[in-house]
Length: 89
Image (cartoon, rainbow, N blue to C red; front, side, top):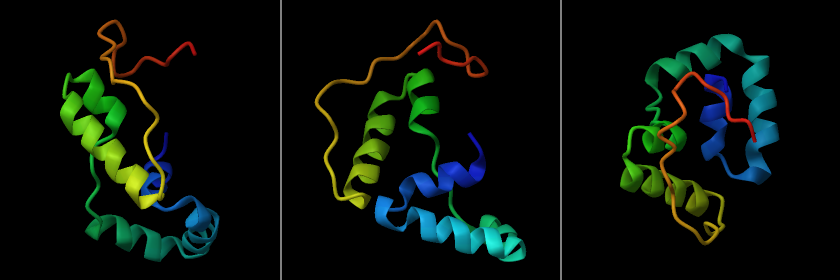
C-alpha cells in the first residue's frame, strides 16, 4: 500500500475521491504536505508487533473520523506472517 493510500485511510469516505484528485493535480503541494504531516503507524503493522491496544485505538479513531463503528470482534496477532509477506486471503 502506498503512503498516499495510507494517508487517505483517515479521510472520511465522502471526501476521499475529491481530496485524492486535488492532491494529484498539485504534486509539489503533495510533497510539501508529506514533510509536515504526522503519519501514524498502520494498525496491521502494530498487530504484527503485538501492540494490539495501539492498533485498536487507531482503528477506533478511523471509525470515528468516518462516523461509523468498528465491527464486533477482537484483533488477533498473526505471528506466522512476516512484515514483507502478503496475506493469502
